[in-house]
Image (cartoon, rainbow over all chains, first blue to last red; front, top):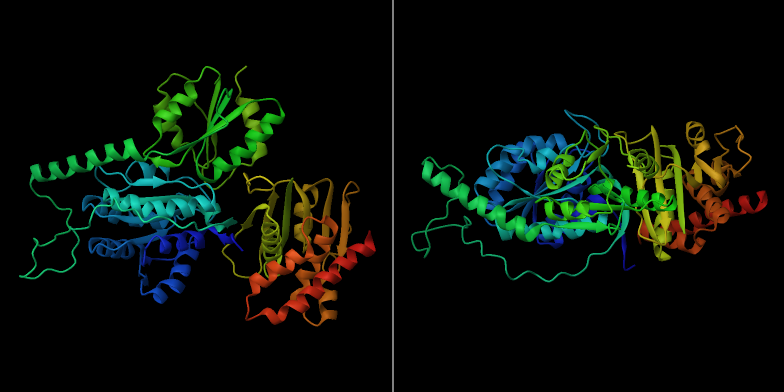
Length: 356
Length: 181
């Protein structure tokens, strides 16, 4: 079989291994436990290390240690578990360490539910942890795309020395789809990890490597922050990704990401049957947010109605509104918790919210 | 072509596996597919169902509300899903545990005594394959050989010896549909 039929979680784990990630530290939580399960089975066989930590806090700090030593490393969790990891993620950002974190979102707040949700958009894109930092956040809408983005995630993390997050949801994690692991060229433009703590002795011909996020002197902390901000601007410029689907001359534009975006594609087809031309803007990177593409698509003269759709009380819609900057009204459809709208419901909403 | 299907029952009856095999078989035949389980925290028992979408185009929504075909393995699933079969569609009822008849007269209804047939074959574990055989025969959405190939892939070499019994179960299920048509 050229294609394999795989569950999202397992496909993500395999993609990480193929991207050269041989270290995994985590703690089980539905709906992503198949990621550690897969890693536990595979990593020891290839000389890697799988470790189930005593908590999410411990796991993210193990990631910090391995990343500091220059390894490709990841952790994976779901919403409540990611909340626990946020302190560590802020430290990773402050210490400028590359690492990959998977968040298979489930309903919240609190322990919430185990079903898919998109309630962690704010947490992911607006910091989550303390301090002025960002993570690159990739949001797949199919299992195949989760594989491709997972492999990109390690390269992006190494390129920009930043924690990078794959933000998926329970549906992507639990569903099975045909997938292909395409052979990938190893990137040769990634910077050497000369900052890594790989061991030092008096005869080493380099200065001692120190991994740290503590800068007591105001000027030094300022310098680190300036460096981070300059890097974030570069990421915004070079790494923003978006899919524009059926947007040309559309009367209605939907904005959605992840699982909801693919359901929107079915709604686009349903609306077409009723003679309404609907297009979809799907951010693939939710940070950096594709401001320009979102703005320019919505600014088209043909666009009369704009609806952002999420499994949340309305989080990404704020970024859509900022991008549109008041030029057009941006409406919202969605529910917080775990309620995922069907294509039929979305189509009905389109007809209801449509401007005459 | 866009076929939307639901397989539903108690955990442990094999509804999820039936859906997986159908999806894999369709993939083997070059179709685009998705398999989405409704998942709960329980290991066994409770209700379990999955949605399988088969299409010529990449699958957009993996959610299925109204289906071309629905398989119900227990009574709560019949109650929940009977109204979700589109007119002209198919409903497969596990008559081993569901004594009721369907009230729909705008769809094709098949009654499959899957447990009894599996007992006759000497292994109750193949009861879901009896139902899958009936499903494939009635819907003709994939070839039976593709289901067997999917099964071979799923079972792997270690359990390949189980193929003949599963194949027989599939054929017995198909025969039940032929007899009811």
